[in-house]
Amino acid sequence: MKIFWVLFRFLTMFLIFFSSIVSLTVQGFTGTYGINYGRIADNIPSPDQVVTLLRAAKIKNVRIYDADHSVLKAFSGTGLELVVGLPNDYVKDMSANADHAVNWVKENVQSFLPGTNIRGIAVGNEILGGGDTEMWAALLGAVKNIYNATQTLHLTDIQITTAHSQAVFANSYPPSSCIFKDNIVQYMKPLLEFFSQMGSPFCLNAYPFLAYMGDPENIDINYALFQSTQGIDDTKTDLHYDNMLDAQIDAAYAALEDAGFKKMEVIVTETGWASRGDDSEAAATVNNAMTYNYNLRKRLAKRKGTPLRPKMVVKAYIFAIFNEDLKPGPTSERNFGLFKPDGSIAYNIGFHGLKSSSADTLLLSLKHFYLFIFCVPEIIISIRANIWEEYMDIRAQDWSRPHFLVSVISAVALLVFLR
View: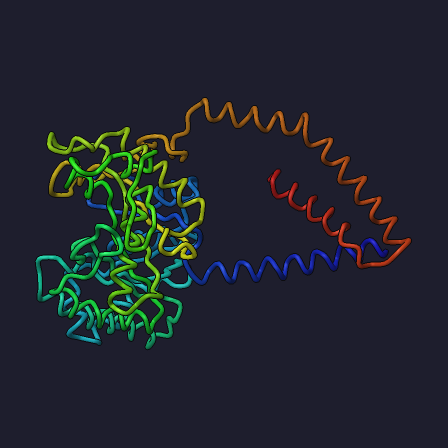
């Protein structure tokens, strides 16, 4: 009976601990890797298929640029964490009318909770520094009204943000010299003050691809692609950078510090590399896109910060799931997708698409065959012997021996692995 009660006490503690982890996970961004789900296309899979694709790729954090109800319904009950977008066209209206903001949040956020795990609302995209200066002035009012709407509706776990392009910066090289443009500061500082009060991050759309394209004569493409390179040195901070994305993020941190917001976190809300472009976009190739996105994924998996903020783990949303064939502009704008319209991978960076190859299936089968034939019997025998030995020790001594729990944890881990 004693062994039964030991097992019961352990499993009870395990369930309590696991439940506490789950509850903490729901509070914010899980992990470091997310993706943007753009839909300016007429040939991409349905939202239900996209959910299947994302779950197969184990990508949990997703941003969309609107609050399309078919997408919100498809994401219901999936566990995927979603940031919805208030499109730029709505910003002026939301700024001028608080009731409209409440109605928008009620119809596009509250009505889908809790089934759809909506974690945030992005108010507009790349407004400051864009062509509509009237919208610059309206942005803060829209942010405040959307935030107040979430509070009125008791949606206290929804984070409010807005994403900025590099156009808000006066200079970003070297990173420590970065400040906000003079014509931006009067709009940016009040916005940052409000975000600071809410605990919201500074959201940055950072594209080494665009930076390289703008100055290929003076930028080493290896530096942009996370490849081996001499990198750059920032003499003011005495910091070394071996890749451009880290430098772009630290430039944003420098601008925030100059504006008086040193402690604000920077999150990359868009980054990626085009796989195809016009004749003038020579860097937009499949090989470069694969190299950038593969190396970016490895870099994010390290869960480390930047040279200037080593304790601030870098988090990024990749742009994008699919190529978007209806987007205007140069050819590169329509070719940032990691997946093809049929759900297969555009190039291999370690993901599996909706269509897996027979080679993948065979490899997985052989792996499981080897595991069960050669490894599992020895592991089970070892665990059984260890548990029995510890049980005999417990009978002879006391109940505080930790090794028994280690054995049981090992058994539980094995069962989870074999699922």
